[in-house]
Image 1 (cartoon, rainbow, N blue to C red):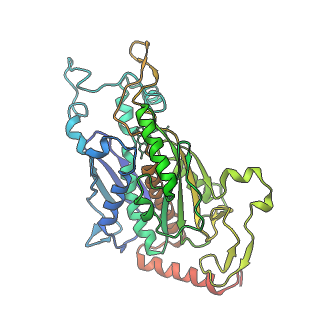
Image 2: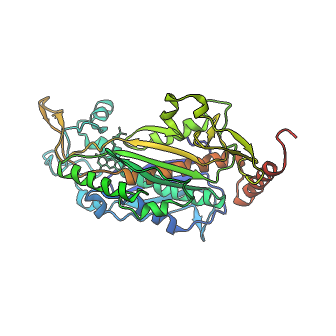
Amino acid sequence: MLRRLRLTTAGESHGPAVIAILEGLPAGLGVELETLRRDLARRQGGHGRGGRMRIEQDLGEVMSGIRLGETIASPVAIRIPNKDHGNWSEAMALEAPEPDADDRALRRVHLPRPGHADLAGMLKYDRGDARDILERASARETAARVAAGALARSFLAEWGVEVDSHVVRIGPVEARPEPDQLQPGFRAEADKDPVRCLDSVGSRAMVQAIDDARRAGDSLGGVFEIVASGLPVGLGSHVSWETRLGGRVAGAIMSIHAMKGVEIGMGFGVASVRGSAVHDEFDLDRTKTRTGGYSRRRNNAGGLEGGMTTGEPLIARAAMKPLSSLRRPLASVNTRTGEPAKAIQERSDVCAVPAAAVVGEAVLCLLLADVWIEKFGGDSMGEMRCNVDSYLQRLATSIPGK
Ligand SMILES: Cc1cc2nc3c(=O)[nH]c(=O)nc-3n(C[C@H](O)[C@H](O)[C@H](O)COP(=O)(O)O)c2cc1C
């Protein structure tokens, strides 16, 4: 998915820390650590989160790659300690346990939870204890992606690109559509709301739906929308299946835990109407530099045509399934005895759609930074700036092919 940037994450949910190593950012990018701290805090918020979020207050410790406030082109390593690890040191120890060690103290799991990686992972990796799977499958990993994504966000901001998100559905409750195009930076407004929804009436109903699900020992999913604005025409490419940006955007979002669907622009709505109701007609508009001097009468395409950015906002929506760990556990099988049983109960959120939207921003920031580096190249921000300026100037002043 990433071609020029490389992101490796490591760490288990109750291990000592989760870690991100991001390589490929040019030298000379100014980084404010506050951006990183803020995005990590945003991932922890939202009505419907569980007790774990009250324990953890994520602080990313940057270990390398930044000096005196700027990137120096070397890999940036970020460590996010898991405060909860203190309560799990025996279960997560590196050393082999005593032969008579108590399963409960080691928090072994033989009752896999439907909807999680537990059972498929046990079978694939030949592990008798589902904890060997679920510790890594946990969405705690997304803290590392958000930390790396904050650096990508800083990079994109240098070029006038903003990536925002808001929640448009929680369970059965849908937000009323926004009357106008959302202004870049609208995530700050969404952050003020308990479910990151821009419609205050919808938000109240969403909070209610989450509280109802909590009382019933159940969980809820939903839909969030991500908007990237300020992108110039021509990122991505039509020439190969793996360079088409739509596929990369969908892949990046689908890589987030619990995502079950992605729409771009009008999305699934295109399937039920005629072409004239879908495609965005062009006009010449010399004031619009980033679109190459053309405007579109609407943006049903969601900012992508032929696998390339059009210069209009890139709009993607993601459907998140209801969380799989339920306070009233689902039917499972004890993998030791083969007997029917209820799945194990792990501490869990009731709804994490607001947090997932922040993770969605992060992975889109990483992907767009990658595509930007692919197009404009350069080892330093200064070198890249020359390339960007020359491209934008050509878009503003010349007719294609002349
Ligand atoms: C930000 C975020 C927080 C999550 N928190 C929980 C949680 O508390 N409980 C839970 O059962 N699943 C949670 N999930 C979803 C699971 O991690 C996910 O469903 C599971 O790993 C199985 O992967 P899959 O749904 O992609 O198949 C969360 C996902 C995200 C993105």
